[in-house]
Image (cartoon, rainbow, N blue to C red; front, side, top):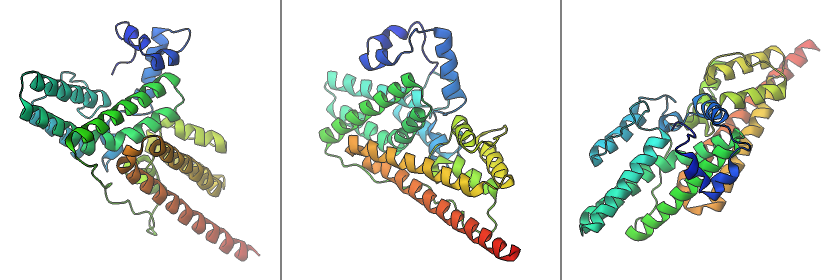
Amino acid sequence: MTGITNGVLPVIQAVPELAQALPKPFDLDEAAAAHYQLFGFNVFPYEAIFLDESGLLGGEVTASVRHCYHHWGYVDEVTEHSPDHIGQELAAMAFLCLAEAEALARGAGETAASRQHQQIAFLQHHLLRWLPPFVLAVKAQGDGFYTAVAELTLAFIDDHYQSLLSATGRLPEKWAMPPPYELNDEETGLKDIAKFLATPAYSGIFFSRDDVGRLAHHLDLPRGFGDRQQLLTNLMRTAVQYDQFSTWLKVLEAAVGECQTAYQTQVAHKPWLLPFVQPWQERAAQTISHITHMQNKVESYNEQHSRRDN
C-alpha cells in the first residue's frame, strides 16, 4: 500500500516478472514519487471508485466490503485505508486462505469448506468485479513496474478463482452494473457528460487526470485544474469554445474503443473472467453509442446553422 520499501525490495527481486520490471537504476525516493503519482493522483485503488454510482468512497460499496470483514471475523489493521482498498481486499483474501488452511490442518472440513465459499463469494461479489478495469487503468498510465504488479495480481487471482470453482463445483455468477446514466435528455449539459465519463460504473472506463491531460494534448487544448470530473468539463468547454467539440468526440470514441479492445484481450487470455469483464464491455459499448448520438446531434446542429448562413 505504501509502494516499494527496503523491506519489500528483496521480495520483489525474488519474483522474476517484478524484478525485470524494476526501474534501472533503482532509487527508493523516485519509486516513492512514482507510487504517489500513480495511486495518489491518477488511479485510485478502491472498489467504490470503480463500482459505486457516486464514484466516491464511503457509500454502499464500501459498506458492503466492511460487512464481509465483520462477518468473517476479519479485522483490518491498516486504518488509514478504506476497507475496499486493493491492498485491504487482497489482505482479506489472504486471511480467508490462511483460515481455510488452518481448518484443514486440524481436520475441520466443514469450516474449511465454509472458508472456501467465503472466498468465492468475495471474489464474485467484490474483487473480480473491479480488478480487470483497475488493471487496465494502471496499465494505461505507462508505469512498467506497477503494470507488472497489476497483471501478476490479476493472473494470480484468476488462477485461484479457477481452483476454487473446480474444488467446490460452483459456477461463475453473472452480475449487473448499476442502472445506466441517462445522457440523451435534452437538458443534458457538459457537466452531466463529465460526470458520466468520470464514473467508471456508468462509462465502463476509468479516466485518470493524466488520461485527460493526454486527450487535451492531442487536441492542443487546455484542461485547467480540478478533480477528474472538473478536468473533463474544462476540456469540453474549451473544445466548444474553439469549435473542436466534434473532434473531441472522435478522440473520445477512439479512447473508449481502445478500452474495449483491451477488455477483449483480457477475456481472450483469461476466459474465466468473461462474466466479470462482460458488464464493463457492455458499458463501454453504451458509451460509444452515446458518443455517436452526440456526434449526430453536433452534425445536425452544424448543418442547420450552415443552411441559415447560406
